[in-house]
Image (tube, rainbow, N blue to C red; front, side, top):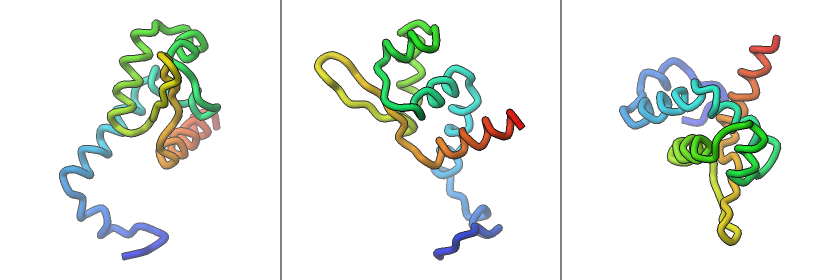
Length: 106
């Protein structure tokens, strides 16, 4: 079933795992701190310290939120020495985030 536009039947066939992941994604996007982090990461890769400093947050707060986002595969990281660098990892969700921000500003 390859269609550009999803039809009503597609949404009737949602399995429990898909429902859970979708609801967790919306949960992730419902938190202002996570939105701020994701929005910052649309501009490029950042370390935990850079995120904390830029957003005036505690490092522990940033680490906690990044763990939540990483578990949903919304962000990914790479290690350089002892420093972890995070970047966005889901173009679909970033697109949704950008559209939502644009809508809110409209």
